[in-house]
Image 1 (cartoon, rainbow, N blue to C red):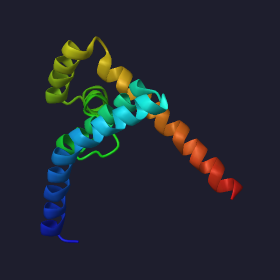
Image 2: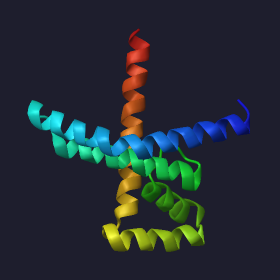
Image 3: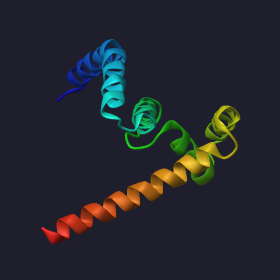
Image 4: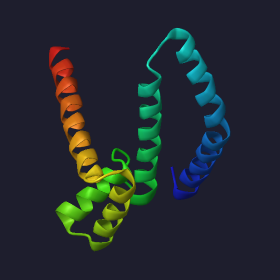
Length: 123
């Protein structure tokens, strides 16, 4: 695909997300209430998904949230803008939010990779 095709795909996906997310979110909440599923976990997963979309837009990193990649840039690449942004994020979400997000994501990625490798080796 060329850049123009990717751009139109992005615009289409964005429009569909903006239009359909509120409806699908409410339907899933009602369904989860009826089935007595964990609503808190569903909301958490949806929030992380949006946060990862933000990481894609802001940092071109599809597998990191804004908070965790901001921490990475500040702590590991000494990016002054990221350090300022990290303080801003931590102000709203609590001390060390970005660092804890980064550590959680890195640990989770390692665990998922290990599980994947074990399944692949056993196949």
